[in-house]
Length: 275
Image 1 (tube, rainbow, N blue to C red):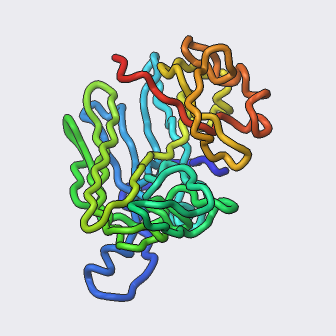
Image 2 (image 1 turned 45 degrees about the horizontal axis):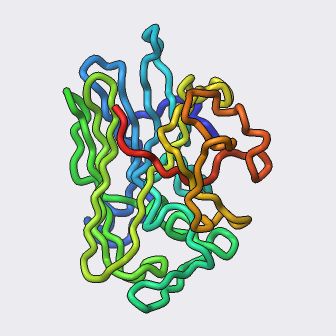
């Protein structure tokens, strides 16, 4: 995986296709966009390719700035890469077993892109398409950007058309919010969006995150089978390698996590909102 070597100029554009009229040209152009607070010590970059979070520059306790998000250097790498760095994945994040589901008595067959399964909405899910920039306020007390994507009925095998909005916003003092809104236009359909950012709070060039300390208010998790599909059980984390009820280093049990120690690839059932 590639990390960013240097920050890119804002609004660096890559024309991916030139066919069609003005509207088509807008939708075939992907670029980088920046949000920055008034003080200048908190900023993010995003791209309308996959509505992805590209970077997040924040100060540490001593005021030193670092980029804490893993990302690519160019739009072309987002378009051609297989990773979902910072992307807004969907229509359904995670895996759908056997690339099919039943809704209202009808079976829908999806495009496979993870063995027999569909992951993150299929080979051309929401993280692999160009979104339209609807609003962009780059500076001020609460700078923000809103992306829009219209998903067609039958896209990647899913039923029904969708209007999808994602809004990134900075607020005081160092808060980043990502708000997602989806409207189904004509049919019932499953929707489960997620932002797929990889974080390193010491800065993306500082090495691994195994010494980062994590506390998670989640007393249960969903075990998975050999294909990484949830079994349907919601199991307690107490006494298991999945228990982050108290603050411990992320890497404490990494070597014994199923799947060769590659990381925690399952879902937690959170206990509710904590301040």
